[in-house]
Image (cartoon, helix red, strand yellow):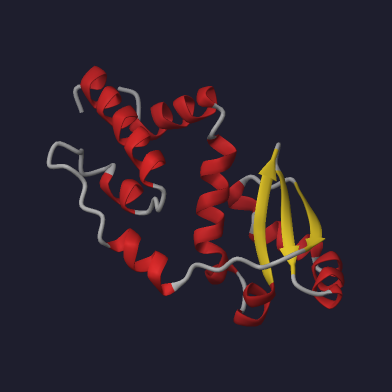
Length: 144
């Protein structure tokens, strides 16, 4: 029997959204990976071919990230990050209003229980609906 995670990973890779899903998960967990000072001044802004771009809000943090590159790569190993780039920019943080929006999503009754946490975590309704459709197809074909 094939694991559902394997099927979803394969579909995500085939659709070219695997990096986007990894980036979303990383952004969601960023504040837990680093101390409060670091996560307030840094943000994972893009992920392409295993290279994570971290946006920082000052030259001091640009230097800090560069100096601690190896330590950061070790912390990000579970996200399959091979390298990091650093750039200056505006830091985006999840606000209380976006947190409450994701917590109030109620998936349809026919959504498999294994997919509900994944769908609840998505802020973008269009992506959530697309993924729910993929889950329905997988469930239908796999008899899960």
